[in-house]
Every structure is written in C-alpha cells, then in structure tokens.
Image 1 (cartoon, helix red, strand yellow):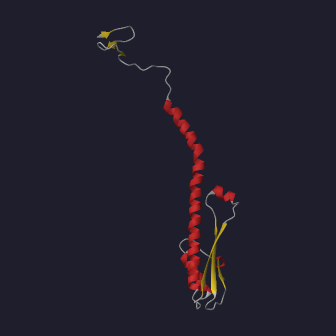
Image 2 (tube, helix red, strand yellow):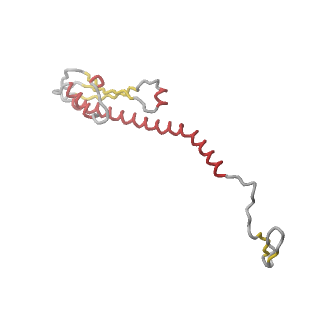
Image 3 (cartoon, helix red, strand yellow):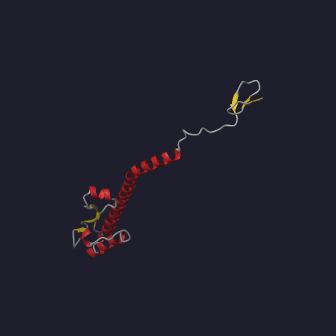
Length: 162
C-alpha cells in the first residue's frame, strides 16, 4: 500500500506497521567533507612523528655498524695473534695479516695495530696483538651527542709463541 504525502511517498509494510521513506533523499546543508579534515590531521601527525622515527632507524643502523666494526676488529686481532704465535714471523707479517682480515671493510694504519712484545719474540713467551679503530656515527643527532669525537674501539688477543 502506497500513501502519498506532500513531502514524499511513504510505503507501508502490510500488517507490520513499519513505515519506510521512499525514496531516501540525502540531507543537504550540514554535511562536512570528512576526507579533507582527516588527511590534514594525518599529515601533521606524520610530520611530528617522522623525525623521531628517523632518529630511531638511523640510530639502530649506527648501533649495527658499531657491532660490525667491533667484530671485525676482534677478528683482526685474532688473526694477527695467530700469525704472531709463529716466532719466525715479523711485525710487518703480523700487521699485514690483521690488515688483510679487515681489508674489505675499512683500512687499518700501522698505528692502530699494537704488538707486544715487539720486535723479537721467543718460544713460550705470550704475545699480545691489540687492534683499534676510531668509529664515527652517521646519525647527526648521535654525532652531536658525542660532540663530533669518534668512539675508540679496541680488541686484544693473546697467544703463546710456538
């Protein structure tokens, strides 16, 4: 059954007493565009969170680099002391072995490789090889915290001369 009024037609469900408007018309006037207001809010939130997020990501990359350099330096010290345990090897052989261990990652000058005792060793005597390297952070904020000073990483290894 269809009932007409001045506004719009209304359809009655038979026997149920439910009134439904037909056809549905959108209200005009008090409608806000919700997409523009939320996209502006999202942009502001992103701009506030982005520097903190970048600091965390770059800081974790620097932390990974520190561990990588630390492991490389420890391996170079172990390789140097392995060569030094042979009493016929010279200091230049020991430094070359340590340098070859880290040759693809970074360069080690002679001043970063310390050998004790040097230059002569005798069988049964302990020998120590210490490898050090200056680490500089890539993250600008961490660099400011460290006041531009590099972090000195150093590892030692000890063996008995054979």
